[in-house]
Length: 170
View 1: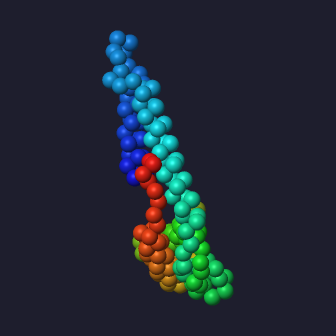
View 2: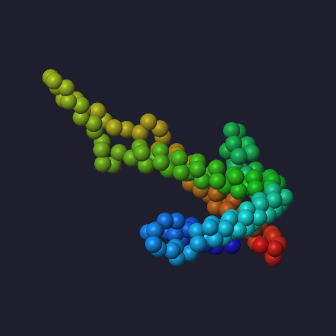
View 3: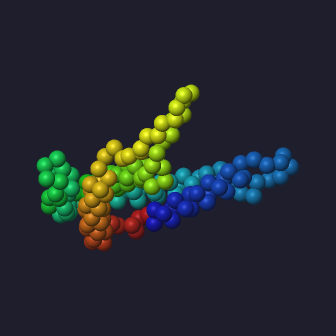
């Protein structure tokens, strides 16, 4: 529903911008103020929809494995009861952390450039390029975090299927 509203808003916005100016002798194909008014109505529907979803997510409790509860101790997930909103935030943070670690591993790849050559007036010196962290351990961490992410994402989807939100008014 939200996606449909947003696509409609984008289409209306394109039409709106196409009709905002033209030759002095031409009339716009559609009234820009009417298009703007329709955009505002759809924005209000998006606001109502997202607000309802956010309130429902904040009041819906779920049981899931949280990676963040004892993160500094054993790095093992702990079963917790939190709101769906908290689970969604945890999922987003996990995605960002996984992305960060993947970028590190990618950045440390020395497959194509193993040596750096420095030329000075009198000499040439080669320096071996190497990763400055344990790549294998980081790859294992990525795998572990990705597993937690898959489990959490599945649980969130499961809970989402059980939630009822009244969309009749929209």
